[in-house]
Image (tube, rainbow, N blue to C red; front, side, top):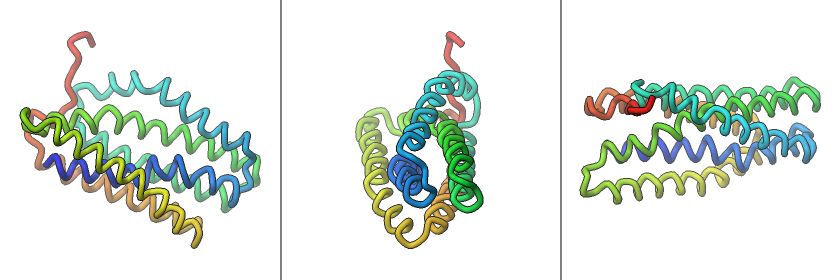
Length: 199
């Protein structure tokens, strides 16, 4: 069970955060014509959105189903990649820059969701005496995703930007479906995010 959760996290890393950090700026500059300042604004607003949303999202998720948050993450990231694709197909540079900034903000919502859920879920699923090993497995699969993601994204982008974003969106939706199936097998105690006693 912990292994499946870790694999989902690794795939999310490869086709989510890794593509944001590596391929989105390349695509924005080379395919859409966004300036260096525009690329910087994408990441500025992404970071600001995380800073603003992280605590409210964590509070909102208390007592709610964890796999639902993972599933929503995949849908949000898929929507972000479709917006990224649209920015290069139908908009001029100024409008596309604004749309890609919106992509960064939308993506940040998913980052907050997965950040609150993934690590604690792995810890709760692991046997107490093996918690360190299971956490290491989760971190390793995530790092593998961060390593493979840019290589896969680079190959796809070299072939076609449309292919990159459609495949990334499709994989994110597949991760959402996998999270739903994972949720059916979760022990009752691990299904809901804990509620803080200070909430």
